[in-house]
Every structure is written in C-alpha cells, then in structure tokens.
Image 1 (cartoon, rainbow, N blue to C red):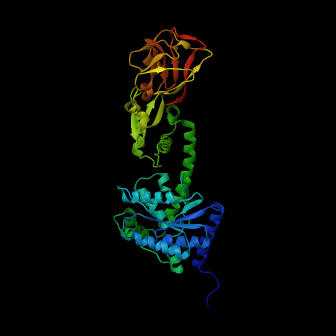
Image 2 (cartoon, rainbow, N blue to C red):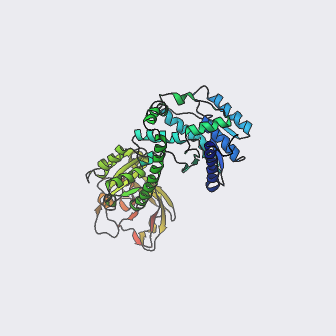
Image 3 (spheres, one colour):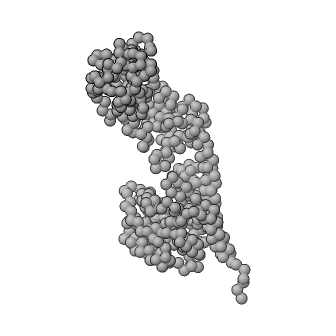
Length: 451
C-alpha cells in the first residue's frame, strides 16, 4: 500500500512552486511573463510550469541564431508546444556578429529579447544552479572581480529590462526528475557538448573531476555567488557615495580623490570608467589611467583613450570626454565671418549660442548695430585690454587665467570693428574689451548655451 506521506521529491517540487507563486505575487503581481525558450530541457520545464501557474500571463520567445541547420526545426518544436498549450509564441531570427561566438551569440539573444519585450512584461529565463556555478568558475578563470563573481542574480533589474531566474536554486538533476515526471519532450543542442566552447568544456571535462573530489562543490560555489552578490551591493553603496562626493559633470576632483586608499581609488575608477554597454575596464587599463594620467608630471599633456572615452587631466581634475569633444580641434571649422548684429539677435558660434541684449551697465554702442562687424579666430600673440582690467593682456594669458579647458581654446573668437577689438567670445561667455565704443546702457552678447 502506497504511503500517504509526500515523498522528498514531491516536497521540494511543491516548495519550488510555492516560491515561484510567492515571488510573482510580491514582486511581479502587475507583470506578465516573456519566457525565453530554446527548446532545451530547462526552458521547456520553465515554460510548462509558468503556463500552468500563470495562464493568460505568459508568452514564449524562441531566438533563432541561425547558426545551425536544426535551428528552424527547434523553433517549430517550441512553436507547436505553445500551440498545444495555447501560449502565444514569437520566433525571433537574429544575426550573430563576428568575433567571440559565445559572447556575440549572447548579445544577439538579449537584443532579440529586448526587441520583443512589452512594457508590462519581465523576461523569465531557465538558468539553474549548475549554470550559476559554471558562470562563477569561468569568470574566476578570466580574472573577474567581485561584480563578476556575483554571477547571475535571481532578480536582475537592468536599465532596459528585468530578468527573473526562478530555477536558479535548483540542480540540473532535480529539473531532469521534474521533466521526467511531466513526460516533457525537449531538444538537445549539440553545441552543449562541443568542448571547443568554454562552458561545454567545463561541463564535460572540468566538472566531473572537481565533483569527484568535492561532491558538494556545486552547492558551495553557488553559495559563494550569493555571498559575492552581498559584497557587490555593499561596494555599490560605497562607490555611489564616492561618485556623489568626488565626481561632478564627468570630472573627478583629484585633490580629494587621492586621499582615498588605493583599493577605493581603483574601485571608483572602475565604476566611473564603465563604457556605454556597462562593461567595466580591465585592471591594467585602470592602472594606466592612474600611472599615465593622474600621476603624470604636472606640466605633461597627459591623456589616455579607453573606449569610448578619453581621460585627461587639467587643473587637478580628471575629465572623461567623448572623442568628438576631446578631439574637437581636429573636427571644428572656425572661420572668419562678417556679421550685421541687431538687438536680440542670436549668434551660433564655436563657443556656443549667444544672444545680443541691451545692458543697464556698460556695453557696446548702439552705433555698432546693423553695421558690418567681423568675428574671427584668435591667433597667437594678440593683446587685448579687457574692460575693468588695467592695461593690455596677452589673450593667451587671459585664457589660461580663466582656466578655459585646453581642448576648447581653439573655439575662442574675436569680435572687432575695422581694426578695433570689441570683445572676445569664449566658452565661458563674452568678454567686453575696453574701446571708444564702450558706453553705459549699451549691448553685449550673452552666452545662453554652451557648444
């Protein structure tokens, strides 16, 4: 006679279902679910579970990388299962770019997910405990830090999507038992057994060796990932405090920054230097910024390119610049031109957008309105008598004294009438020059928008 007590398998299966239901109720009660399904064992189980637990809230997506002749058959397999279960299904064909095949295939897959994700949906993936342990080991071998060793999170909230991995705490053996119980069919991707790929090699060669020596190592490695996630969150809190304290408008205050410990300096640089795709720079690149830019000689024109930004030092500040800004002198065309200025007219110049306004104090005479004036680039050697200062100054010295950024100094232009300098357009605004045309209640160009 069969015992009425539940078996061990029945207990953990029920607990797993209860955990999924509780998570959905607490975190995702307002959301529907887009299930990433490859047709493999794990994702077919996930799709079956969610279609049972959340009818009417589930869609499936199969991303066809078009790398194997069988991929269309697998897409048809997933589509037919969804038809049988009355689950809406999307087949998304993607093109995998050249380069590291595993990396590019993953990028193409996530691009396909994001393309089809609706505003009220979260992406649900079937990663399990062995996937987690393999990810941590492979990242360890590549020299990853705390963030990399955090591996995959059960709930991964990103800027452009949220990912839920509800099976992350379950072993592959448990999932296989569940699939067998449900009599679910699935496909086997041969690349999962191709030891040319790092993950397949680790699974086929490395894993059995380690597991023979350390039978519980999968559980232990997965637990390490969770501990790394806690450590990473603490580091995130610290680095956010440092960013708020030492960084403003993409420039780092070096005087304060250099008082931090070296590990904290490296941590702050690592987060600040992340590229637009969220990839953090290597330790070697961080050390190059420290040695070649931050600690370069005070008189050196130190700069370093770390895609997609340039890092350069000026006046005890480290600046992070997009390439077009740092190399503006190569791209900008600053020419001489004749202008006829009227009141309230807007001038679009290299330094920025200026509007000519009447002043209650000293400005330029109205007789200069509607007459031909010249705006020209500066050349080395000019001297100008700026209003309110004593005597003529070399314009170069005035620009240096004003701390105009070196990579923007070529945008300085001179306004003159015949041979009389009336003023200077700079990225900081218009500098009025002393001349016979200065008068009370005159007009001046005012900077309203920087270039």
